[in-house]
Image 1 (cartoon, rainbow, N blue to C red):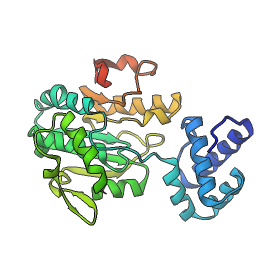
Image 2: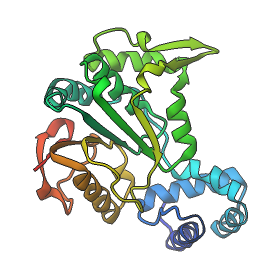
Image 3: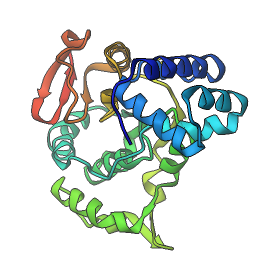
Length: 275
């Protein structure tokens, strides 16, 4: 599918996103242009629309269509222990410091379908911190949140997940954490007992708790600079003094309006610490 820039198409997309915000209060107006252009074209193909205007009229007339379109507007692509070096660094360098707190709160922002959440929960379980840690897993996509809470993944993905887990310093077998059936793996409920799932938008909502670690990986890359600054400002306000922020390998605070609020704790793994 073509992804070339087209000023008139982009203008129609902006009108579409304005209408979405006005009617459904989901704000995608500050998502990266190229990414949103690609997703709108995918949605047009899915719904058989020949123009953005036709798509706009369709989704404004039917909330069910918008709910389905939300699956195109939000990214749901991840894997357990994606970028194993990050989780190894969390295990070896961050968790020992978090363990000095009597209780710990972790915010997995933009948790999508839960792969990063369960990766962190396993690390905390193996390092003996799960029982005194509360995880907040948030996303704007209700279907993604439901999938995250269910913790069910195709069995065919387990080989890659297990390889990542070993490279991330896993101490057991990943299979210890899930049961199988019907070609799916279901993660153990004991990992879920310390997780609160919630609808939260980095574009429109405010800070809801004080936390010791924010892990928000591969989300900021889909935002423009203004929205990136808003999201990082939320993370700054949510973190305790000397709390940690983990980003994706292609994300940085170097150009953020809030860069002075953080120090580069482990630059290679994109882990920052609140000043």
